[in-house]
Amino acid sequence: MGMEITALETLPPQFIPTVNVFNLRDIGGWNARDGKKVKTGQVFRSDNFGNATEADIDHVVNHLGVKHVIDLRRAEEWDESARFPDLDGVDFHHFEMLHIKWEQIGLRVNGLSDEAELIEFLRHRYTGMMESGYLSVRDSLEVIASGEPVVFHCMAGKDRTGIIAAVLLSILGVDDEDIAADYALTSFGSARWRAWRDENFGKPEVESGLATPAEAMLQTIREINARFGSMERYAEATGFKGADALRDLLLQ
Image 1: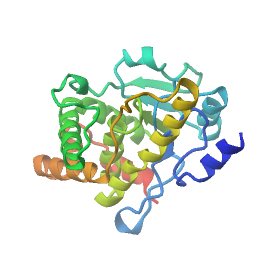
Image 2 (image 1 turned 45 degrees about the vertical axis):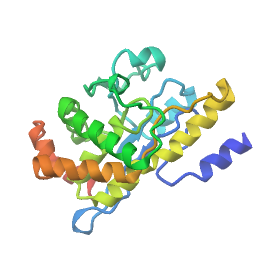
Image 3 (image 1 turned 135 degrees about the horizontal axis):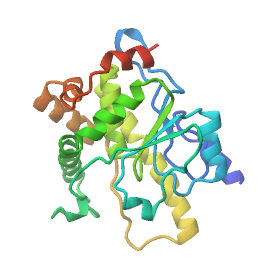
Image 4 (image 1 turned 90 degrees about the horizontal axis):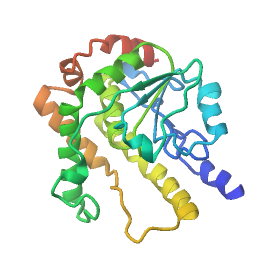
């Protein structure tokens, strides 16, 4: 237990102290437009809750006060890692972010060792997902704008989750560099998950899963800006009309 507490204490302050949810964090606290800050305690991003302890779920529902859980995954991924439990007072939303499965794409997803190649691969995947999965972006933003505390997540909490966070923070006027920094914080969550996996299942011969270099998110934002004019215009193109409501809710 001592090691666990120490590990939690050394995490960046955005992280929420849960035991078997490894990448749960508050998206608030960043500097935003007009000298304001993004409100904390309202919107959270996370990896999946399939291994969560009862105490973890209790913390999310009763301490953080989360009323909405948005799962961006394919339903088949629930077989690998179960969805958030059905609980009174918590609305569960399944907003699958439609995309071509990465493992079906010719490039080797595992073992992209060249960082420039990895960044290009991620930029292509993210901007592609933002086009094919645009309805999940719109629907997620609408739930967030409705005003009750919410957590959105995918499997590892880095790619699909990172896209929702990036669009949301852009609408709030957070700098691109800070959005990329928020994205890159996943490296801490991934390290926690790998340590848990190694302890419980043994270390795999080949490490799977891709890193989250900040530059991948910066290039994604630049490409979306080139395609749509801005991230906020992209959100409008998805059919989302609540940008002002988001700013009223989340800027302080």
